[in-house]
Image (cartoon, rainbow, N blue to C red; front, side, top):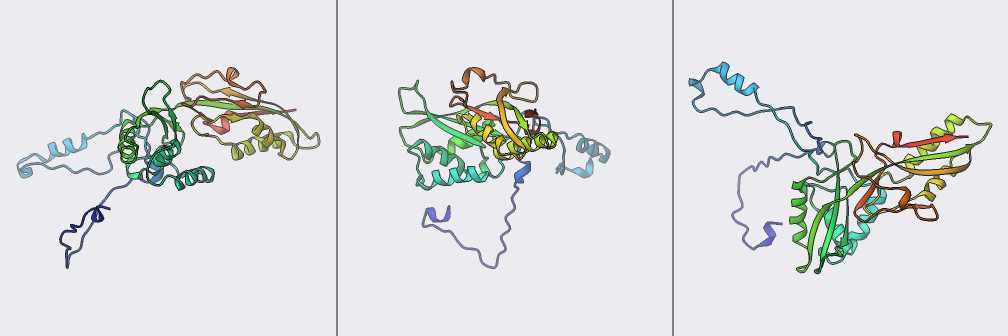
Length: 293
């Protein structure tokens, strides 16, 4: 890209071997929780006039090196699922390397080169309190356990620089953190009397973990009807009598409080979510519970 940006190519080297050395984070280890970066793998110390110094003191200095990260390191992201990839490809097809519509901005965020970091989910909405064409860009990342966490400031600065290259001149953008709401699912099913009820219950939980979106999009509601549909397809289940979304709180979960009962639609079929919130079933094995009768 740099070469074709001008007609000045410089002098091509001849009879020369060019070695390019670079460092890269593996996909699965780019995210680190606070305090977890504490292992020194390799060091390089340089001393002036080392021959005049005491080697024991030098060894003490080298051994005293310690590292730690006070804040979580985010910016790495797992490969998108098939459904996520379908949505991103569809939005990218119409983007044409400029950002005009909200969907253009979403596509642009996912196109940012991985060297600058990556967000797990994003969404764009019009700022209704702004007199200008101000947009709110909500983002959320993944941590080292591949669950949702706030995006780091460096990642958001990189994202802002990236977007400024393509946005409309009159657009102003605020990059904000999405609020993560951790929920669980409780259900009750009626099983065939002649079959093993424990096995049916285990299969119900497995089917929910496999067929439900454990992490939706920012602002995306969750359907109770879909849970009923999945459970009723499980062999040995006669009927599903109840499904309930519950808020998960505690040290392992997000500190965002969300009143679930007040935000279920009147027909009881959908859990609504604001445009700056995102639902997550953080620990599917623990957060999906059921009973069978």
